[in-house]
Length: 352
Ligand code: 8ID
Ligand code: ZN
Image (cartoon, rainbow, N blue to C red; front, side, top):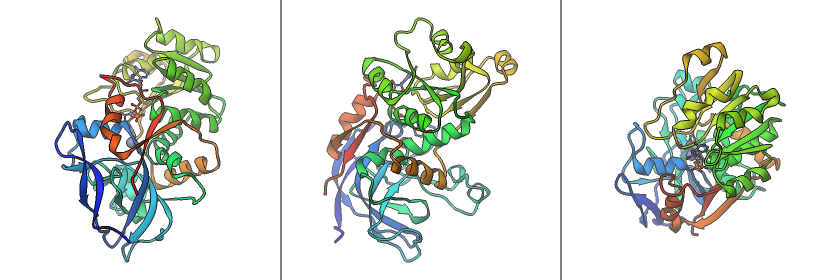
């Protein structure tokens, strides 16, 4: 039976920290489901939210988290497509209107009425979370709920970003921030999609991880004397990367990527460092015919496909597990201004 109260990590004021406390269990509306969360990933977005890094209003007090994997335990009368007992994933996109032009054309992340898990509505850092039935991702029963949790944001986002890059099998993609949560999964999706990977990040722990994940070259941005030259040297004929996936939480690579992108190549901005600007020399961008674009999570079908890659055993990125109670410690490790020390993803285990 569903209890009245539950454990949650609650951010009560901008800057945090999250407070571990008991709050009421929410009741799903007619077109919603209640998911008992078993595991949730910790995305850097959760840290941005707590710090108030972005020009996008936030719910407060807030239960963060948007990479939830669990089991449907209740549903409203109008909730379709998912049943009580199904394994389910809660994504960043908690709901959208489903009637605007963006929703009609499968660009629902662009819906102006979209609700965001762990940002405008309470997310997965609690035992019971609400999701709009139409947006919950059904998960196969036979996949481990801890390992699949990070697919619900990081996996979907990098899979979509790789598709948006237009890179084709055999081409080379430079992944900037390859050692982080998104980056570790990006390497696996890229490989599964037949792409060749250059990993860019800092430190030897991330080097070892990237080499295991199948990147052909690791460029350490903290040690390289000439990053542009090192990246280009790692590409076919030294002509640069066919695609660049920008996943870092710092501005510099967003202003540098044009220099090592191949002519006709694409640069896909995905990371969201605070107050940052994309900057590119007009001359090089024009004469190299560079395509610079943004990519924002994915639609429902991208979610289905990203989960399917995982369920078929093609995606194996490392993750560490910790109890929900440890969230503040994980934020400290993640914070790049202090540590930036997490190789891969942390997944929180939600108490029974
Ligand atoms: O839909 C979207 N666009 C979307 C979805 C999900 C997450 C965007 N994001 C954003 C997050 O909000 C965050 O800004 O993507 C960014 C990366 O999220 P993450 O992977 O969860 O963060 P992380 O695990 O902390 O990894 C960041 C990595 O970047 C490296 C760090 O060492 C770390 O491994 N990095 C940094 I910071 N500066 C770098 C640099 N100059 C760098 N790597 C290479 N060069
Ligand atoms: Zn995320």
